[in-house]
Image 1 (cartoon, rainbow, N blue to C red):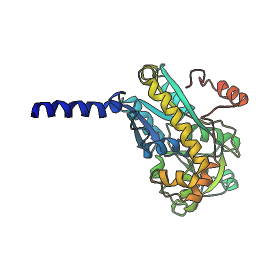
Image 2: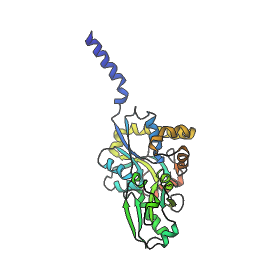
Image 3: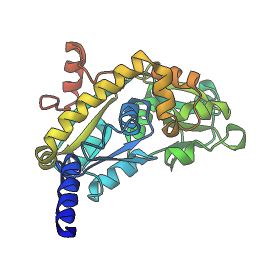
Image 4: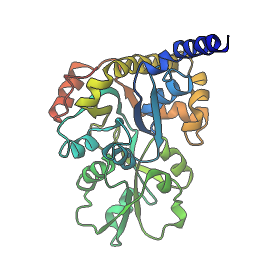
Amino acid sequence: MFKKLAIFLSLLFSLTGCSQNEYSQLKISATTWVGYSPLFYAKEKGWLDDLNIKLLHVVSLSENMYLFEAGNADAYVGTQYEYSLLIEKDPSLMPVMLFDRSYGGDIILSNVSLAELQNTSETIDAYLEMDSINSTLLKDFIPHYGLEGKKIQYINRDQATLSSLKAGELSRPSLLVTYTPYDIQLEKQGFAEVASTKDGLNLLVVDALFTRESSLNKHRKQFEELKKLVNKATEALKQNPQEFYTTIKPYMLELSYEEFVQSLDSIVWINSGISPELEERIQELGFPIRGLI
Protein backbone atom coordinates (compact mmCIF):
# COMPACT_ATOMS: atom_id res chain seq x y z
CA MET A 1 0.00 0.00 0.00
CA PHE A 2 2.71 2.48 1.06
CA LYS A 3 4.89 1.37 -1.85
CA LYS A 4 2.08 2.11 -4.35
CA LEU A 5 1.49 5.49 -2.71
CA ALA A 6 5.18 6.33 -2.96
CA ILE A 7 5.24 5.40 -6.66
CA PHE A 8 2.11 7.52 -7.27
CA LEU A 9 3.59 10.54 -5.50
CA SER A 10 6.85 10.12 -7.40
CA LEU A 11 5.02 10.07 -10.72
CA LEU A 12 2.94 13.08 -9.71
CA PHE A 13 6.05 15.03 -8.74
CA SER A 14 7.77 14.22 -12.01
CA LEU A 15 4.74 15.35 -14.01
CA THR A 16 4.37 18.65 -12.13
CA GLY A 17 8.08 19.34 -12.35
CA CYS A 18 8.55 18.57 -16.04
CA SER A 19 7.96 22.15 -17.20
CA GLN A 20 10.84 23.38 -15.01
CA ASN A 21 13.13 20.51 -16.04
CA GLU A 22 12.45 20.88 -19.74
CA TYR A 23 15.17 23.52 -20.00
CA SER A 24 18.59 23.75 -18.39
CA GLN A 25 19.00 26.95 -16.39
CA LEU A 26 19.87 30.08 -18.36
CA LYS A 27 21.43 32.89 -16.30
CA ILE A 28 21.22 36.45 -17.64
CA SER A 29 22.93 39.45 -16.04
CA ALA A 30 21.23 42.87 -16.28
CA THR A 31 21.80 46.38 -14.95
CA THR A 32 19.36 49.07 -13.81
CA TRP A 33 18.68 50.73 -17.16
CA VAL A 34 15.20 51.68 -18.29
CA GLY A 35 15.76 49.86 -21.59
CA TYR A 36 16.12 46.55 -19.74
CA SER A 37 12.97 47.04 -17.67
CA PRO A 38 10.99 44.52 -19.78
CA LEU A 39 13.27 41.80 -18.37
CA PHE A 40 12.44 42.81 -14.80
CA TYR A 41 8.74 42.97 -15.66
CA ALA A 42 8.88 39.43 -17.09
CA LYS A 43 10.69 38.24 -13.96
CA GLU A 44 8.17 39.79 -11.56
CA LYS A 45 5.27 38.38 -13.56
CA GLY A 46 6.74 34.89 -13.21
CA TRP A 47 7.08 34.50 -16.96
CA LEU A 48 10.73 33.44 -16.72
CA ASP A 49 10.04 30.54 -14.37
CA ASP A 50 8.72 28.10 -16.97
CA LEU A 51 11.74 28.88 -19.16
CA ASN A 52 14.11 28.25 -16.22
CA ILE A 53 15.71 31.68 -16.76
CA LYS A 54 17.43 33.31 -13.78
CA LEU A 55 17.85 37.07 -13.98
CA LEU A 56 20.85 38.49 -12.11
CA HIS A 57 20.49 42.16 -11.12
CA VAL A 58 23.83 44.05 -10.94
CA VAL A 59 24.73 47.71 -10.43
CA SER A 60 27.34 48.30 -13.14
CA LEU A 61 28.07 47.55 -16.77
CA SER A 62 31.54 46.32 -15.89
CA GLU A 63 30.14 43.88 -13.30
CA ASN A 64 27.93 42.56 -16.08
CA MET A 65 30.99 41.75 -18.17
CA TYR A 66 32.94 40.26 -15.28
CA LEU A 67 30.09 37.88 -14.40
CA PHE A 68 29.90 36.75 -18.01
CA GLU A 69 33.65 36.37 -18.42
CA ALA A 70 33.87 34.34 -15.21
CA GLY A 71 31.16 31.97 -16.39
CA ASN A 72 28.67 33.09 -13.73
CA ALA A 73 26.22 34.29 -16.38
CA ASP A 74 25.34 32.67 -19.71
CA ALA A 75 24.32 35.97 -21.29
CA TYR A 76 24.45 39.67 -20.43
CA VAL A 77 22.86 42.91 -21.56
CA GLY A 78 24.98 45.85 -22.66
CA THR A 79 25.97 48.17 -25.47
CA GLN A 80 28.11 47.74 -28.57
CA TYR A 81 31.04 49.14 -26.58
CA GLU A 82 31.17 46.27 -24.07
CA TYR A 83 30.69 43.90 -26.99
CA SER A 84 33.71 45.41 -28.77
CA LEU A 85 35.84 44.73 -25.67
CA LEU A 86 34.77 41.14 -25.17
CA ILE A 87 34.75 40.07 -28.83
CA GLU A 88 38.54 40.45 -28.83
CA LYS A 89 38.77 37.79 -26.13
CA ASP A 90 35.90 35.60 -27.32
CA PRO A 91 35.22 35.63 -31.10
CA SER A 92 32.11 33.48 -30.59
CA LEU A 93 30.33 36.33 -28.78
CA MET A 94 27.22 37.57 -30.57
CA PRO A 95 24.13 39.73 -30.02
CA VAL A 96 20.92 37.73 -29.61
CA MET A 97 18.26 40.43 -29.49
CA LEU A 98 17.97 44.22 -29.46
CA PHE A 99 16.24 46.25 -26.77
CA ASP A 100 16.56 49.96 -27.49
CA ARG A 101 18.73 52.79 -28.68
CA SER A 102 19.69 55.65 -26.41
CA TYR A 103 17.99 58.94 -27.22
CA GLY A 104 19.26 61.07 -24.36
CA GLY A 105 19.54 58.20 -21.90
CA ASP A 106 23.34 58.34 -21.79
CA ILE A 107 24.30 61.62 -20.21
CA ILE A 108 27.20 63.79 -19.11
CA LEU A 109 26.51 65.92 -16.04
CA SER A 110 28.62 68.56 -14.33
CA ASN A 111 28.72 70.61 -11.16
CA VAL A 112 29.63 73.70 -13.22
CA SER A 113 28.50 75.14 -16.55
CA LEU A 114 29.97 74.17 -19.91
CA ALA A 115 31.54 77.62 -20.19
CA GLU A 116 33.24 77.17 -16.83
CA LEU A 117 34.62 73.81 -17.93
CA GLN A 118 36.01 75.40 -21.09
CA ASN A 119 37.59 78.32 -19.23
CA THR A 120 38.94 76.61 -16.14
CA SER A 121 42.65 76.15 -15.50
CA GLU A 122 41.96 73.62 -12.75
CA THR A 123 42.10 69.85 -13.13
CA ILE A 124 38.70 68.45 -14.11
CA ASP A 125 37.61 65.31 -12.25
CA ALA A 126 35.75 62.88 -14.52
CA TYR A 127 33.71 60.19 -12.76
CA LEU A 128 32.72 57.21 -14.90
CA GLU A 129 32.72 53.46 -15.33
CA MET A 130 35.98 53.05 -17.23
CA ASP A 131 35.19 49.66 -18.84
CA SER A 132 31.90 50.72 -20.39
CA ILE A 133 30.17 52.93 -22.93
CA ASN A 134 30.85 55.79 -20.47
CA SER A 135 34.43 55.97 -21.80
CA THR A 136 33.21 56.35 -25.38
CA LEU A 137 30.79 59.12 -24.39
CA LEU A 138 33.52 61.06 -22.64
CA LYS A 139 35.95 60.51 -25.51
CA ASP A 140 33.38 61.97 -27.90
CA PHE A 141 32.49 64.84 -25.55
CA ILE A 142 36.02 66.20 -24.89
CA PRO A 143 36.98 67.25 -28.46
CA HIS A 144 33.40 68.19 -29.34
CA TYR A 145 33.47 70.94 -26.70
CA GLY A 146 37.14 71.97 -26.96
CA LEU A 147 38.42 70.37 -23.77
CA GLU A 148 41.41 68.57 -25.33
CA GLY A 149 43.95 70.80 -23.61
CA LYS A 150 42.48 70.37 -20.15
CA LYS A 151 44.04 68.21 -17.45
CA ILE A 152 41.45 65.55 -16.69
CA GLN A 153 41.65 63.10 -13.82
CA TYR A 154 39.69 59.93 -14.55
CA ILE A 155 37.98 58.37 -11.51
CA ASN A 156 36.52 54.89 -11.93
CA ARG A 157 33.20 54.41 -10.08
CA ASP A 158 30.19 52.17 -10.56
CA GLN A 159 26.87 53.92 -11.01
CA ALA A 160 25.55 53.09 -7.55
CA THR A 161 28.56 54.83 -5.95
CA LEU A 162 28.53 57.66 -8.45
CA SER A 163 24.85 58.39 -7.75
CA SER A 164 25.69 59.25 -4.14
CA LEU A 165 27.83 62.25 -5.15
CA LYS A 166 26.58 65.77 -4.36
CA ALA A 167 27.58 68.75 -6.49
CA GLY A 168 28.13 71.05 -3.53
CA GLU A 169 30.61 68.64 -1.92
CA LEU A 170 33.02 68.50 -4.87
CA SER A 171 35.97 70.86 -4.64
CA ARG A 172 36.91 70.88 -8.35
CA PRO A 173 35.04 71.18 -11.66
CA SER A 174 33.71 67.71 -12.36
CA LEU A 175 32.11 65.61 -15.06
CA LEU A 176 29.87 62.63 -14.32
CA VAL A 177 29.11 60.15 -17.09
CA THR A 178 25.92 58.30 -16.28
CA TYR A 179 22.64 57.00 -17.66
CA THR A 180 18.93 56.92 -16.92
CA PRO A 181 17.62 56.49 -14.24
CA TYR A 182 20.74 57.46 -12.22
CA ASP A 183 20.78 60.95 -13.74
CA ILE A 184 17.47 61.88 -12.12
CA GLN A 185 18.85 61.46 -8.60
CA LEU A 186 22.10 63.22 -9.50
CA GLU A 187 20.24 66.24 -10.85
CA LYS A 188 18.39 66.45 -7.53
CA GLN A 189 21.83 66.56 -5.90
CA GLY A 190 22.89 69.65 -7.82
CA PHE A 191 24.35 68.40 -11.10
CA ALA A 192 23.19 69.65 -14.50
CA GLU A 193 23.28 68.03 -17.92
CA VAL A 194 25.90 69.36 -20.33
CA ALA A 195 25.49 66.76 -23.13
CA SER A 196 23.64 63.56 -23.98
CA THR A 197 22.98 61.13 -26.81
CA LYS A 198 20.03 63.34 -27.72
CA ASP A 199 21.71 66.74 -27.56
CA GLY A 200 25.37 67.51 -28.12
CA LEU A 201 26.67 64.03 -28.91
CA ASN A 202 26.31 62.19 -32.21
CA LEU A 203 27.15 58.82 -30.67
CA LEU A 204 24.82 55.92 -31.45
CA VAL A 205 24.32 53.66 -28.42
CA VAL A 206 22.44 50.40 -28.91
CA ASP A 207 21.44 48.02 -26.11
CA ALA A 208 21.26 44.29 -26.74
CA LEU A 209 21.46 40.85 -25.16
CA PHE A 210 24.74 39.02 -25.83
CA THR A 211 25.86 35.42 -25.52
CA ARG A 212 28.34 32.92 -26.94
CA GLU A 213 27.41 30.89 -30.01
CA SER A 214 27.57 27.67 -27.96
CA SER A 215 25.10 29.10 -25.40
CA LEU A 216 22.79 30.27 -28.17
CA ASN A 217 22.75 26.76 -29.62
CA LYS A 218 22.14 25.23 -26.19
CA HIS A 219 19.42 27.68 -25.12
CA ARG A 220 17.98 28.76 -28.47
CA LYS A 221 14.39 27.90 -27.58
CA GLN A 222 14.66 29.85 -24.32
CA PHE A 223 16.10 32.88 -26.13
CA GLU A 224 13.33 32.69 -28.74
CA GLU A 225 10.65 32.57 -26.05
CA LEU A 226 12.36 35.35 -24.10
CA LYS A 227 12.21 37.54 -27.18
CA LYS A 228 8.43 37.05 -27.25
CA LEU A 229 8.20 37.94 -23.57
CA VAL A 230 10.23 41.14 -24.04
CA ASN A 231 7.84 42.17 -26.81
CA LYS A 232 4.89 41.24 -24.58
CA ALA A 233 6.33 43.32 -21.73
CA THR A 234 6.91 46.42 -23.88
CA GLU A 235 3.33 46.11 -25.13
CA ALA A 236 2.15 45.94 -21.51
CA LEU A 237 4.14 49.13 -20.86
CA LYS A 238 2.36 50.92 -23.69
CA GLN A 239 -1.07 49.69 -22.58
CA ASN A 240 -0.73 50.37 -18.86
CA PRO A 241 2.43 52.26 -17.84
CA GLN A 242 1.22 52.66 -14.23
CA GLU A 243 0.86 48.89 -13.76
CA PHE A 244 4.21 48.30 -15.46
CA TYR A 245 5.91 50.82 -13.18
CA THR A 246 4.37 49.31 -10.04
CA THR A 247 5.64 45.89 -11.10
CA ILE A 248 9.26 46.92 -11.74
CA LYS A 249 9.52 49.63 -9.06
CA PRO A 250 11.93 47.59 -6.84
CA TYR A 251 14.52 47.70 -9.65
CA MET A 252 14.21 51.39 -10.53
CA LEU A 253 16.02 52.97 -7.56
CA GLU A 254 13.63 55.46 -5.94
CA LEU A 255 12.03 56.79 -9.11
CA SER A 256 8.52 58.14 -8.85
CA TYR A 257 6.01 57.19 -11.53
CA GLU A 258 6.39 60.61 -13.16
CA GLU A 259 10.18 60.26 -13.23
CA PHE A 260 9.91 56.78 -14.73
CA VAL A 261 7.66 58.06 -17.52
CA GLN A 262 10.14 60.90 -18.08
CA SER A 263 13.00 58.40 -18.40
CA LEU A 264 11.15 56.56 -21.18
CA ASP A 265 11.60 59.63 -23.38
CA SER A 266 15.36 59.00 -23.31
CA ILE A 267 15.18 55.75 -25.31
CA VAL A 268 13.64 54.41 -28.51
CA TRP A 269 12.44 50.81 -28.44
CA ILE A 270 13.88 48.71 -31.27
CA ASN A 271 13.08 45.23 -29.94
CA SER A 272 10.28 44.70 -32.46
CA GLY A 273 12.19 45.96 -35.49
CA ILE A 274 14.46 48.68 -36.80
CA SER A 275 14.26 51.08 -39.73
CA PRO A 276 16.50 50.57 -42.80
CA GLU A 277 18.30 53.80 -41.89
CA LEU A 278 19.07 52.63 -38.35
CA GLU A 279 20.07 49.20 -39.61
CA GLU A 280 22.57 50.80 -41.98
CA ARG A 281 23.98 52.97 -39.20
CA ILE A 282 24.33 49.99 -36.85
CA GLN A 283 26.14 47.99 -39.53
CA GLU A 284 28.56 50.90 -40.05
CA LEU A 285 29.58 50.37 -36.42
CA GLY A 286 30.62 46.81 -37.26
CA PHE A 287 27.81 45.50 -35.08
CA PRO A 288 26.46 42.15 -36.42
CA ILE A 289 22.65 42.06 -36.62
CA ARG A 290 22.08 39.42 -39.29
CA GLY A 291 21.78 36.58 -36.75
CA LEU A 292 19.44 38.35 -34.33
CA ILE A 293 16.40 36.46 -33.07
